[in-house]
Image (cartoon, rainbow over all chains, first blue to last red; front, top):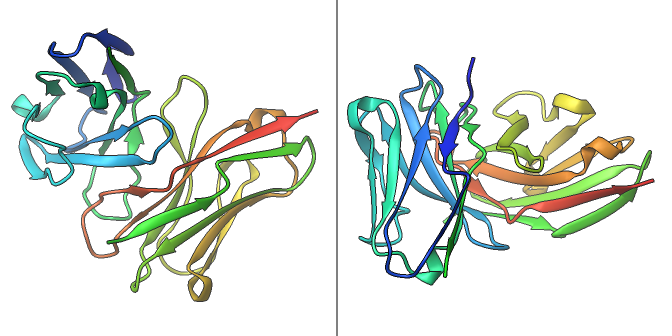
Length: 115
Length: 114
């Protein structure tokens, strides 16, 4: 069974440009999460999808970030326009159920560098 | 708000020595507790978790952790370190009874030297 995949693995962009990150969860997992780790700090929750609906987007930093999950399969996270402080590693995770004890399966992350 | 503290951003041990990675959480209600490991160029992988029941939890690769409510701790241990244990380790919690939103500590990078 394929794990969670993320694309691209690395992205280097200029301040003010737009970047779109993609996450493909494990097949059949209705729950999809985005997290971000800024250099040297803790991994922080961004948002949670249940199928195509946003269950919790309390961690989204500001309106420059837009997440979508069309059809309840893969998800995209767009940053527009990117700022220097958006640099970090963006992780995606998925689970079958949404209970607090369910294991989340993580992708390898996308390392975003904004110059 | 809940928080997780991992004492020591870097820990170095000799091969064969005891591994002890510390984790404390702040919560008036015991949450669910997790340890994840990240090897280079890979995603986070679950080592073990505590939900209810026995407070000593055994995980993969010989790791175990003990939930101590009185100390609000969930320290990770392994009796004998192996070179392949070199990785970054993350302690995380989710609020019991709530949705599955992980709150992470800052991580501890473990180095194992010969």
